[in-house]
Image (cartoon, rainbow, N blue to C red):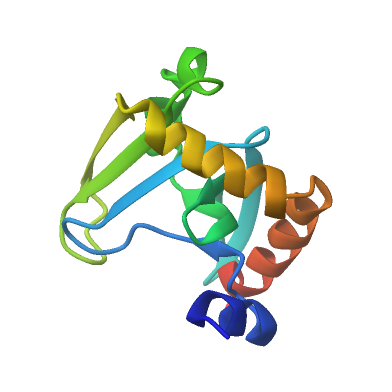
Length: 138
């Protein structure tokens, strides 16, 4: 069994964050953005859950609104290109910068599309949103 499958079994394996400097995520978008609300120390926070497929399969990519807006600027590419997001900033740095680009290689999009076709079901989005709420509120 793979690490990804084990994490899905344990819980929390169906969502991800970019949290450290230089971390890269290459994905295709497979659904509409999901508004995620959480409460931490009495303050309500909002994040965006982006339904994506990576080489590890489906997951909900949880990010801030700034990054989600950058991803949305590439919406015209969602059906033909993979997207790459790179974090620039230390862990916990609220001023981190994100580089978001369309991946020009058609092979990347085709590989991820094949994974989507084999492993993705729309019902997975609601499950990952529910699972992420548990983590975001702790």
